[in-house]
Image 1 (cartoon, rainbow, N blue to C red):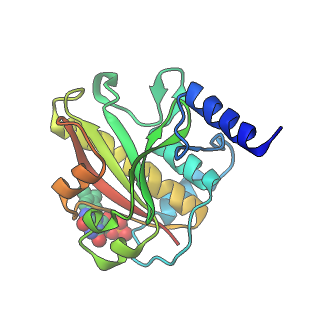
Image 2 (tube, rainbow, N blue to C red):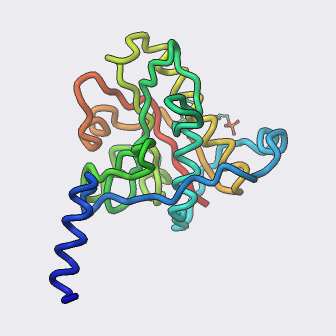
Amino acid sequence: MKIKTLFISIVVMMTSCGMNAQDIQLPEPNRKGGMPLMEAIGNRQSAREFSNFELSQQQLSDMLWTACGYNRPEKRTVATALNKQEMSAYVVTAKAVYKYEPKENKLIHVNAGDHREVFAMQDFAKKAPLNVALVADLAKQTNEVFAGMTVGAMSNNIYLWCASEGLNTVVRASFDHEGAKDALKLGETEKVLLVQTVGK
Ligand SMILES: Cc1cc2nc3c(=O)[nH]c(=O)nc-3n(C[C@H](O)[C@H](O)[C@H](O)COP(=O)(O)O)c2cc1C
């Protein structure tokens, strides 16, 4: 097959399965192994030092699954009041912003470019390679306290996963809330409640 035909076939294939060329298909999350739970809880802590280390796609898949993946048909890794499932997670890197699509285990490209500045007030977070924005749709869950609890559970799962992987992390409420909403291209009823920096 000629290169041009091959390229067209790949684009047609990706379009027909609803995938944009900039989207990323993650590997299946690894649901086995990791540090024993009591050790991970013992190691949970915030860290504010980050190098240029970038998570592998497997690590991204595993981390996002712990935050808000499906662990049973139609049910999630974190509890939500009345099973409203109002939460979503976005990945913010130096190159682009993606929305985690848990059913298909994909990162959907939502915005190009480096938007880290609006997700951080502290310098370490502006330079860290990865921030995860934890979002709630307040149309699905109108009680913002309950939405905050859901997002808090997402954050804690990320903390425990980082402890298990020997990675650094800190959750933050200090960021430009309106700027972050714009960078993620959120709808009117969606809100970024927390941003979590993850790395090494
Ligand atoms: C809701 C919430 C908001 C937070 N916001 C920030 C923040 O903006 N910047 C920061 O450096 N740490 C932030 N933290 C992390 C806390 O400072 C940290 O959890 C606390 O100092 C205790 O340290 P530890 O997590 O190591 O136990 C936040 C934590 C929570 C739960």
